[in-house]
Image 1 (tube, helix red, strand yellow):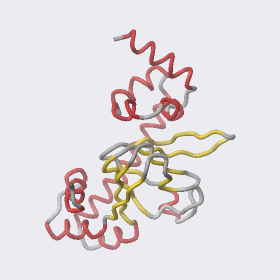
Image 2: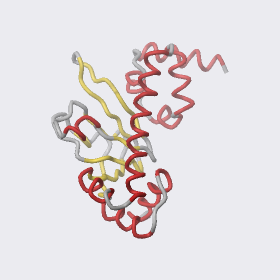
Image 3: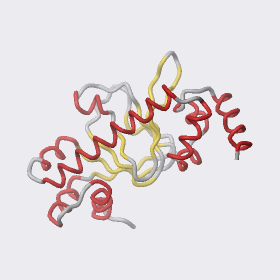
Length: 195
């Protein structure tokens, strides 16, 4: 069984290097959370106050538009998620986050993270790299749906996020790729024959 110290080390390996003292600080910041499949992690109208790290499981970030649920982000182990506008403006979010599998999530409270980052260079670097990664992933997704054909969107997602493709219900994958489930079905069939 992994400890909070192990999670702090995981984050440090991915985003920064840290001294033992900084790992102690990170360990004190991390808040473990468990969610059952289908449980809401963040509800519409709540203020997002944390950056979340998926240690185990699968999450979906989505919103409602014209009576439909539209998937904006899918994340598996080792990924970060947040409702960035709500987090920084401290306003209610229109996004929701749900666990698509039983999930273990670690929350990094933004206010506490910013306070300790003032005195810890490596934690500042970790914070900056997490935000950079979030912005880059948003840009990659935006470019994917803006510039790629349905076939290329699916192929690129299979390459970039094979675990997400394997574990996520197809209706959510289709929504994330901004195509109908029928189109995704055709694209998947064509991809099998292209191999």
